[in-house]
Image (cartoon, rainbow, N blue to C red; front, side):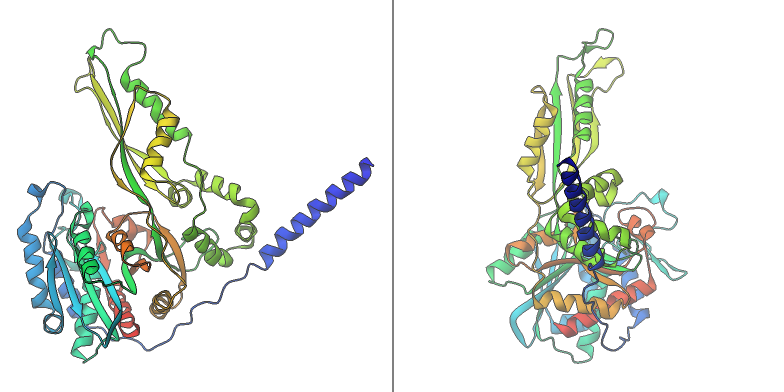
Length: 480
């Protein structure tokens, strides 16, 4: 009897491994997008000059409006009619919110309008850490240097260069097209919501909204060496949360057994030892199901059998940290600590600040409660400073998605096109209240080094990358 049971168990194990291996063998690539269409001729010199002029506008945004040079924002707004006279003759322009710019290019029909987004505000710079001036728009060795070249004046330039060129050729879009540019994206300001309010008041529900997000990248997925064009179909939410504790203060020569700084430190350790549970959301499932089919066989065994190895996958992502970990769970990064201003004084009040990036079913409030339960210290007050919940997932079973994917394939002919989950927050989040087709794709091929320049030092864009961006928008405008 015992021998029979052992044989049965062995047979079950063999069957299990056969199923695992067969599923991996059958985990073949889906039908890929075949490049089509003709090459696009772009006026490279004009695109370069125009982006240089945009960079020279110091449109640095700040939560403290006294630190914003509003004249520079006005300078940017006044620059656009000079650079793009055709657009300003053919399109209606509105200034909305604090510094929003909205262009309306009327098409043959208006039942499936398109919104192309970008923002022209930029984050501050530490000039001393830059090799070249951040706002001079220097062209050197095939690169345009300057804050905003990648995030996102380059995209804004690409949109307007494409439209200016097509209008000059007498092209009329099939559908109404809107170009929506905010000057407060970097501070999550009120301008983009004001633009969306206008769409809502006009009862306009876009067929597609395209904003910054993913890009064409390499080594983006385990076991995949091909270029991958990643399109965000959802983005994580965020919450800035403060842990705060108070005491009577006093002299440091007679400390209590546990200081409030020590208790806060213990709370931080507990939080880091108890990360949020892993979640396999739709964008990540779609990414795995698309790119996992192109991975090496060892990874295919894992990706083809997530029904069995989901926990293992989540653990691998957790141990890897970085983007893989952020793809699977809500993350919590401790970013601020405050206590006494003197070494010999016990602080009457101390705090720790942390930034959470929320995903899936986690909300701002549920995350706050989770931290409270992990800390297990009623003396520590857990307060939400601000935040917003994760975005809904966008529709990828529609013509808009197909057009976007085909346009990417036509422009970057070797790239695998895939959905993904955007880790950062963008203005496009606000459009979810008027459409379920919000896509996040920065129309650029970006190396790891270039991605690190976004909000970093020495931000610059290769001229060839800018030209490709213009090509992409020309193709997209012709298709939609």
